[in-house]
Image (cartoon, rainbow, N blue to C red; front, side, top):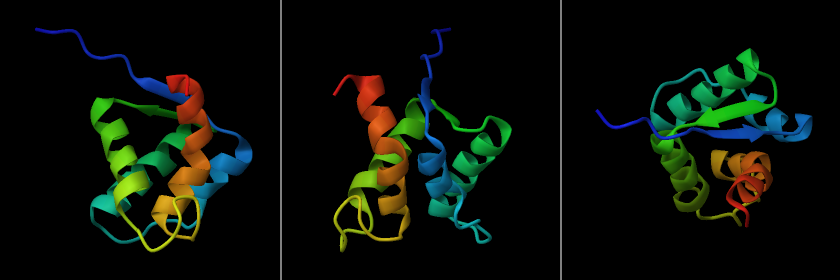
Length: 96
């Protein structure tokens, strides 16, 4: 059996984490599941998010492919909030 890939551990500032905390999600669906998963992680480990390969891929897709009417970091939709919350930690983790 192959080894599990190392997770991407991201440390967010309080302001970045607040983008995930607001608003709470009450409906169901792919976007809501992603947001709820990130929210739960931040509740368990404040300012810390850990993503496996599948989770990182999902976050990157939502950051780049949805809500195309606004600039990537603009707007109040999930795409903008993910950009504001995760762009800096991802750049640091990936050395960009």
